[in-house]
Length: 294
Image (cartoon, rainbow, N blue to C red; front, side, top):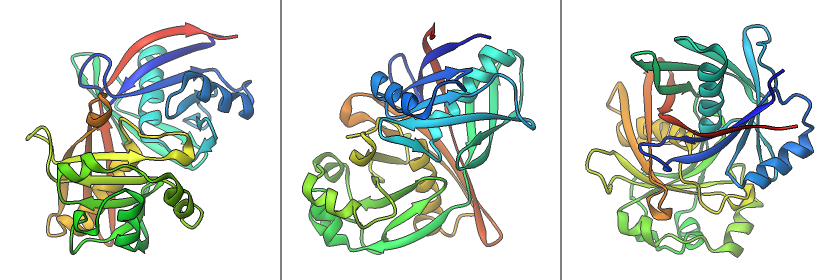
C-alpha cells in the first residue's frame, strides 16, 4: 500500500501561487487528533486525507482538517484531493468523480489539455442564506466605516457547504484597508453560525476578473487565506441572488491573495434551477512535491 503525501498549489495561475495544500493518501490509519496536528505541522489553511485508494460505493472517502479540527467542506481541498486521485492513481482521462466528505458527497469534474488535467471543478451544495447582519457592526470588526459597504445589498451569512459572512465593499481601497479587530471579531464569532469573514469588491487589480476578495478566519487558525473555494461558491450564489439577479447564469473569475502576495484565480459558475441555484467552483492545480509518510 502506497502511503504518500503531496504538496499542491490550488487555484494557481503560476509557479508558487494559489493556495497551498497537503494531501495524504491511504490515510485511514491516521487518527483525527494526528490529522489536526499534521494540518498544524504543514501550516496550510486545510489538509486533505484520502482514506483509501479503493472507492467505497463508487465514492472516495476524503476528510479535511484545519489545525483546530475537521471541517465539513473545503473547495480547494476537494479539488486537490481529486487531482491527486486522478493524476497519481487513476492515470487516465476521467470526466467525473465522486468524493465523500463528512458533510456529504460532492461531484468533481475535470477538463483536459490533451491528456493532462487542465481544470478541476467541484459542485457545491445548494446555497442557503442565513442571518442578515448589521453593517455598522461588521464595518467596526473590519476597521472600516459603514460607507465602505455597498448600499442596497445585505451583509449576510451564506453557505454552499461551509458558511461565510459575505461583506460587499465599494472599492479596492476598502479591501486594502480592511484589518480585523481581534476583540470585536472574537465577540462576533461567539454569536454567529458562520465563522469566517469574506469581503469582496467589483473593482479588481486585473480587469479580466470580476471580483477581488479577501477572507479572514482566525477561528480556524487562518489569519487570511490566499484562495477560498468554499467562499467563491458563496460569492457566486450571492451574486446570482443580489448583484445580477436578472441573469440566468454567471461565469466568474475571482482574484484573491493579492494582499498577501499569493495571487490566486478561482473560477465560479452559478445558474438558476427552478427555485434553487446550482453552484460550482473550479481552478488549476499544480504539483509542488511528493513524499512518503510512516
